[in-house]
Image 1: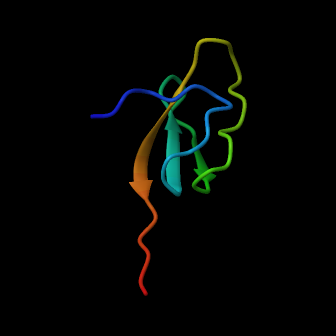
Image 2: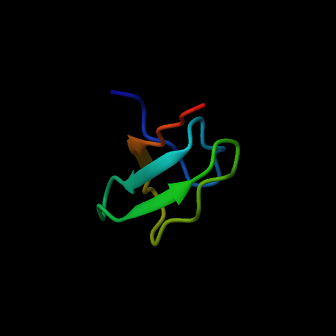
Amino acid sequence: MSKPLKPGTKAPTSGQYQNTSTRNEVTATRGAPLPPTPKAGQAYKLVNPTKHQR
């Protein structure tokens, strides 16, 4: 399991990220900063990476 990511960190992979405290999910695009969390000290983890087909 990867380390939790702080808000403002650029998303390493596109997909669904879950707030480790509230369990709410956000969609993030690779390279875009993760959004702020409701409270200080919360973080995100990747729970569902986007599946790309070429």
